[in-house]
Length: 227
Image (cartoon, rainbow, N blue to C red):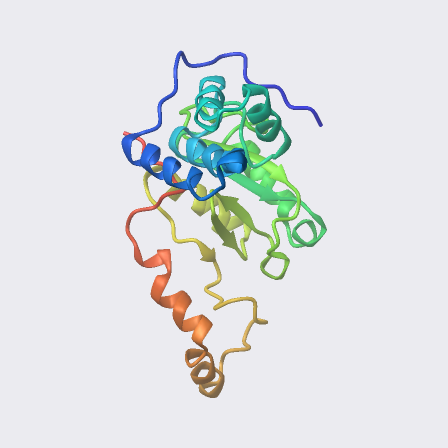
């Protein structure tokens, strides 16, 4: 599917000081004749900053990588994770509609999006804060139905929990992960015994995750603050 860039474009784009420093470090990770390979991380950082990929952003990235703007546009238009039109200023909600999620109620989540955000996909809500789209499998089938916002997954959703999630997105930063408070992808009731819980607590991967988890942070990167 060929995707076109939005007709309405800002006059200019500029990385923030912190993001510019980060981008330059990314470029240096590649050999001098392969630095165009940094195009995806630079595009993603531009989108995290602005919410979408504009023509001026493409031109700035092309200049930094010393390649033609069309080469950057080819990448941005190929990968659906890049938005070529403005999305919700606070959050863009991607609803998985592939078979496992569909069987577990994703179609009802989509109806809620149409009612509470906008009738059309990728169309910002009336207040401009939220937008949504249906996407293909995002790899969390065991915890379906699931949505993705930036790099965060919100899993085990019901109509009630999803509706509440949308309400809290307006002014807050809801905690990602299972909305049923499952530990990972275990069957419901699987961790009821203390023996299994002790074994899990000794798992090095689990310990590392718990120590580095973004759930402990009050600041969220993927849900943008709106004044």
